[in-house]
Amino acid sequence: DAGVTQSPTHLIKTRGQQVTLRCSPKSGHDTVSWYQQALGQGPQFIFQYYEEEERQRGNFPDRFSGHQFPNYSSELNVNALLLGDSALYLCASSPGQGTDTQYFGPGTRLTVL
Amino acid sequence: QKEVEQDPGPLSVPEGAIVSLNCTYSNSAFQYFMWYRQYSRKGPELLMYTYSSGNKEDGRFTAQVDKSSKYISLFIRDSQPSDSATYLCATFQGAQKLVFGQGTRLTINP
Image 1 (cartoon, rainbow over the protein chains, first blue to last red):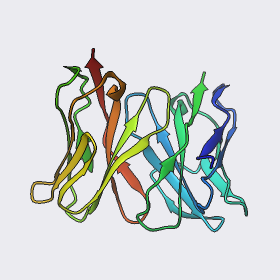
Image 2 (image 1 turned 180 degrees about the horizontal axis):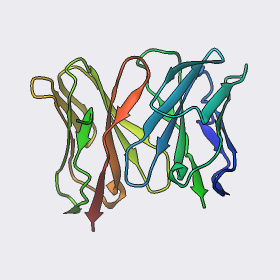
Image 3 (image 1 turned 30 degrees about the vertical axis):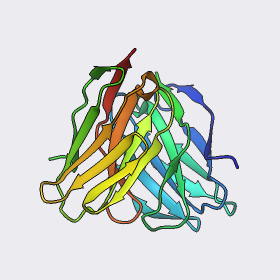
C-alpha cells in the first residue's frame, strides 16, 4: 500500500512565476491538508480539502489556492511567487475530518530565486 | 504567544542516554497531542498520539501529557544513532488543523 506521494520532489522558480504541486493521498483517505515548512521551523497549516471543497484555511494569502479531484488527489497552486515562499511543502492525508492521524508525504522542496 | 512552544535545540547526547523532549501549549482546550519524527529532507512521521493527560508507552518511547501545566514530553530510552532527527510536537486546533512546535533537532552520538 503506497503512502502519501507528492510530485515533484524539487522545484526551482523565479519571483513572480506560478507553481503547481501535486499530492496523492494514502489509499482509503479522503481528506488532504497542505502545510508549508520553512527551514528550521515547524509546518504551518495552509488549507484542507474534503469532498472537493476547501474546508479550513490557515493564515495564508489568496495567492495560495488548491483543488481536490474526485479521486481525492489534490493540487496546491501558488501565484506571483515571492522569495519567502521558498519552503518544503507537505501534503497530509487522513480518513475523514475528525481527529484522525494525518500521514505526511515526503514533501516538495520549492526554491524561489 | 505561539500556540505551541518548543525549544529548537540543537540537543546532542551520547548513545544509550535517556532523551527528554518538551513542549508547552497555550490553549487549555487542546486535547489531542502528537509527536512526529522528521529525518532530514523527509516528511514528518507519526511517533506517538495521546489524548488528554497521562502517559503512553511504545517500545523505547514514552509520551507524557500534563494538562494542568500545559506541558507535553517525549522520552526516548536507550537512544540510538538512528534516533537522530528533528522531533516535532503537535496538537489539533479544531478539527484536522495541526499546530506544530518549532521542532527540536536531536543528535545521538555513537
